[in-house]
Amino acid sequence: MENRIADIGKLEALMERLRGEDGCPWDRAQTFDSLIPFIIEEAYEVISAIDSGDARHMKEELGDLLFQIIFVCQMAKEKGLFSLSGVIEDSHRKMTGRHPHVFGQSKADTPEEVLRQWAEIKKLEKKGEEAKGYLEGIPEVLPALLRAHKVSQKAARAGFDWKDVSEVLVKLDEEVAEFKDAVRQRAAAHMEEELGDLLFTLVNVGRFLEVNPEDALRKTIGKFITRFHHIERSLIERGGGLSSTTIDEMERLWQEAKAKEKER
Image (cartoon, rainbow, N blue to C red):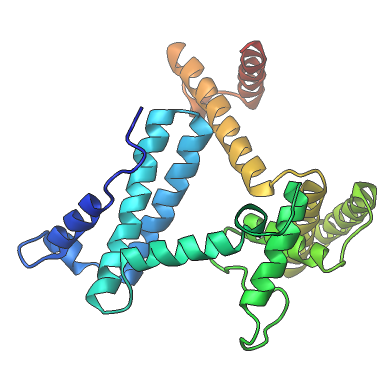
């Protein structure tokens, strides 16, 4: 069993050393903006590790993401903005305050009640700030499917929603018909618009079914890659290749890969 209270100060001291005068030239050259791609990449690698179910991989990738957080905190400390200890203290205070059913007198017995309470607490926290639109605050940098999911969730909490999934499926049929009509017209802007409407409706179908579209698509992409690699390996083993194979043979190998998945 690992020590529950690890010394995060070791990483903080390491980062100070790397950013110091005799430290690493690359680390010293970084800025908040330059670290953005690395933070995004590390976050997605954590997701990939979780999908893999490999605990060792998860541990490694969480460490890499944590290091990026410490990196940003060190740069902020150098500028006199905030420190890692300040981030930890603020997070602890916020999360304690948002769990009054654990640390206070409030009551929330289901995940749904917790989420409703969470939303109300966030509203109170922002009281007095400059008024913005109800759907403000959902980061624009999120992947489009994930952002669509969060936008539709928030709109639904305000009462702007269908009654049940059957109504969303009717809307889906309507959007499919409109998309097909746009394709027949071959109008690029119209096709783009209708495809967007179709995708957004599918996001709402997923929300009603409690399926996160970002997760669903990510897993489907992984499945596609696995099956395609099966096609590629099978062809290479026979002395062939992708460019010299018919679509019918590729489809046969695709179905073979699907059958193998079901055997697992």
